[in-house]
Image (cartoon, rainbow, N blue to C red; front, side, top):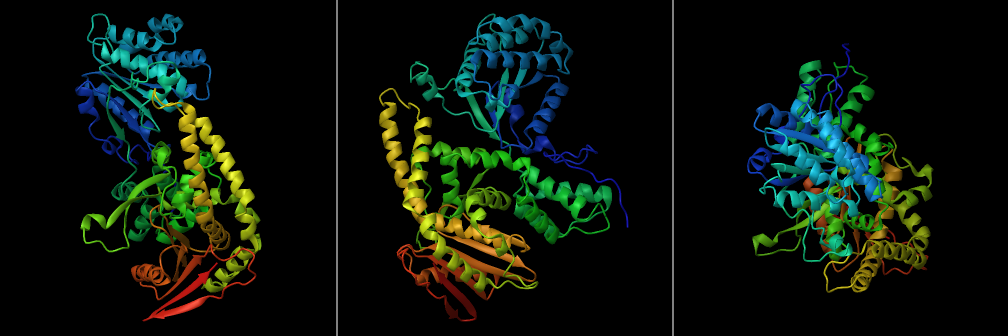
Length: 584
């Protein structure tokens, strides 16, 4: 047995004990240097813990080592939570001075003292003057990166961006030197702030204070090849090998999210295998690591869970998790975009089941969770109250060591749903959700033009919101209850539970791995589609996995809640396929 100190990856793919353990940061975004050469201002955005800091560090080193320009990084993270404008801009100014003092460029370091007196200038010109001072006293053009731009509160960010815009527009004027190129780096793309300008009493036609932005660059997650290369570095250093199936499983669970890629490998090597490098890493290890991670209270998931407490984000994610045929809040597409920017969602193409002669109409866009681990964490958070009400004794009750009594488990759910659905879907609960969400939307209404009042926009949005939430709760909440029930009964013992969910699919497909078997379930809400078509859908799902048995769970909302009858399951034999249909 061979043991040695494990190479530990940090959240961005960099090994903490060897600089060779990393995915080359600069290869993840192309085109930055040409933008700088062309004197453009731009945006770089990506979700948390996806490698922005490492990318910036490597990029600044490259720019400074190339010698054409000076590069400076200024983090605005210290302004987070600051609501007072004067205090916020004092922090921005201090951050800029600190960045100059700690710069690796002596010429910039020497200018830090000159910036200090400028801290006393007004908030609306302070940053512009400080940048002008830097550029006027350097012998090369300056490139500035403002990291954590999202930390600035909205009223302050408008003032901040307006100063950058003014400096950009007049940088060719005498005595008005300004950075050659400038990038804002954060979680979100910087979009139109016209609504905020209108609220501040400025003309709604003045446009975004950062409309000089040339391009928005997104830092992508790792590719499957990146994961392979990263893990290969561990193999070369330690001799420990990964099965091909292990790489496939790492990709499946993480979809390349850097923190997850590193966390799963770290947990497997350190905890499952106890640093025994003689043991090969398999797909089983990744399934176990993913399952364990889902139910840990990791700090990485805190921001995700915090966002899910916001009614607008929560309901969008509910629609996605339950495979709804629609996405609610069509008028509020910026909330969908927020979920994309934060790395909660990704856009995918799904096949339309109906036949179309036009090939271009056989696929449609849909949204699904960014990766299966996030999907499970989101389900856990959205159904936390339901999980708490589900007896802990249900866990693994239907597992006997080598098989799952899936029919027995779903029969137990039928009884659970029959007892609790009147409470879970009561009008009182519905009204509470609606009132909370209306309160939230009114608090977020912004003027979008000079001809529409906030009240008019609020009225339209509230009507739309009531309809969307009513439809969402009545049609989709039952699926969340079943997903919570399955988490309680399966995740403690199953090798893996894969859920294929995406808004636009109209169903949820679930594959449970246990021992040598797979159990395929399809969850649907009774609608216009006939039972025959629903059976056809699960048949295609079963054929994809080459499984001979499947379970179709249909929620029929037309069954009276007062009915004491629980409909028995029916079995359909089609060729060599057996399909059990459970109606709730």
